[in-house]
Image (tube, rainbow, N blue to C red; front, side):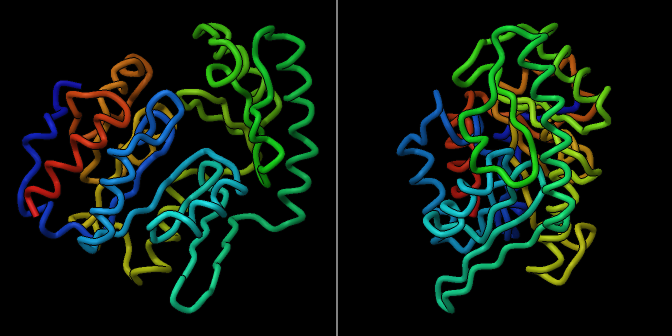
Length: 267
């Protein structure tokens, strides 16, 4: 924790060499569930500067289809690494790459029903996320978006139900995402990177930044050399083993905007 540096100390050389920014969505580039104008402005500025933006999110396939098409992004990694989508507007080509087969995903969805039923029965106040109908691989249990908010003990109880059923689960700032399979944000990130640059993470470390805000960003904090967390990451400090390189002074979308202003100024 003591090794985390203020975003103001980010090096000019890193900002000048930057080719990709991968970023979480909820409570990283949003504020109170909305995309403020500062976020939209920052994403467009990055795009026009030649920096590729790739959202990396626990949000569903349906949302990711929209994001890939409508936002000025190079692609989007969704459902905590279940797939990536990318839309080549020039050639009118939409790429969808899944880490599991259709059959495996469908089987996983059926198995997740047991977790859903137990969580709803045993943890009053939780709910199935409103975006669940648009998911292809995971189960999202809402504890702070439209439901709850639940306390840490209740969140841990839902995670225990998922783990007892042999599922992977990750906690974001609003949902507990559960799925069957060993993939995560990092694995899909590595595949995306190889497909779009032809290079490995090792080769691209000094040209990439990841921005996040919660526990499900920890695989990225562990493996990437340059990571940023918005200030609300502090609420998860006691549950993190791996920490970001830099931290903003401001929270959520305002922190993202703070980081974007410093990066663009250093360009």
